[in-house]
Amino acid sequence: MYNIGVDLGGTNIVAAVVDEKYGILGKSKTPTATPRGADEIFDDIARVCREAMDIAGVGLSDISSLGMGTPGTVNGDGIIEFANNLGFNNVPARQMLKDRVGDIPIFIENDANCAALGEAYAGCGNGSDNFVAVTLGTGVGSGVIINGKIVNGVNFAGGEFGHMVIMIDGAPCTCGRKGCWEAYASATALICQTKEAMREYPDSVMHEIVKQEGKVNGKTAFDAMRKGDIAGIKVVNNYIKYVACGLINIVNALQPEMICVGGGICNEGDTLLKPLNRYVMAERYSIHSKIQTKIVKAQLGNDAGIIGAALLGSIK
Image 1 (spheres, helix red, strand yellow):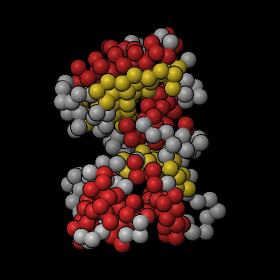
Image 2 (cartoon, one colour):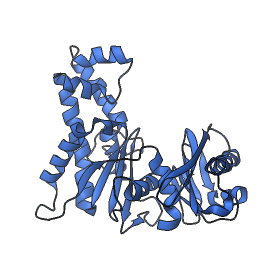
Image 3 (cartoon, helix red, strand yellow):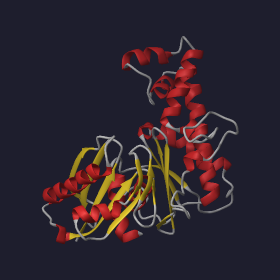
C-alpha cells in the first residue's frame, strides 16, 4: 500500500504517491493561481492527486491515506481555520478532499510541521523522535517533533519559533511584534542587512557583485565575505549570530536530538553550519550533558513537505 502526500503552497500545488520507504513513485503539480476560491483550488488538488496516481501506476484501492500540508492553522477536525496567503477562513479541507478524491483516511497539517516530519523520518533526522526543523526563507518557518509526534499546542498554532523575540523593541516583524527572530534571521532579513551595509560601505565588493547578478540576494554578503570584503564579513558574522541566538533558545527550551536548518541560505554549507554549531556549543545551558543537540543541514529540499504529508496517517 502507498500514501499520497500533498503540498498546498501559495505558488504551486504538488501531489505525490509515496511508498513505504519514503520514495516518490509519481508526482504532479499545478499552479495554485491565487487569489481564487477554495472550491477551485480543491478541484485542482484532487486532479493532481489523480495524475500522480496515474504516473505511479496505482489506483485509489492501493492508497492507505492522503495527507496534505498547508500554510496556516489547521484544527483537529481538518479545518483550515486561517491561511492568509491563500485567503482561507474556516475551510473544511478534510471533507472537501473526501468529496473529491474518495472515502479514504485524510489528514491535514500545517506545511512547516509536514516538512519537519519528512526530514525527521526520511531525511537528515534518520528517525529522530525529538527533532526541530527550521527553514530560513521569506520568513522563518519551524516545526517540532517530540516523542515522535507533531507538537501543535492547544490551538494548533504551536511551534512558531520565528516569532519569538530576540531583540526587545527591535526591528518590526510582519506579525506585528518587534524584534522577532524572523526579522533578523530570515533570508528577507539578510537581504535587508546586506543593503544596509552597502549603503554604509560604498566601496564594498558587494556593489560589484550585485551589478553582475542583477540584484541583492542571500548569497551577496557571503560571496563578498569570501573575497575578504569588510562589509560582507560584518553582515555574515552578524547574521550568523542572529540565527544562532534563535537556535540556542530552541536547544535550551526543548533539548531535541537534532535541529535541521533548511532554506536557500543552507547552500552555504559549513560556512554557515560550523559557526552555528560553535555558538550553540558555547552558549547552551546543558554544558555538562553527554548528549548534545546537533545542528545539521536539511536534506529533502522541496520534497520534505510532500513526504511528511504522506507520513501523517502513520505517525499522527
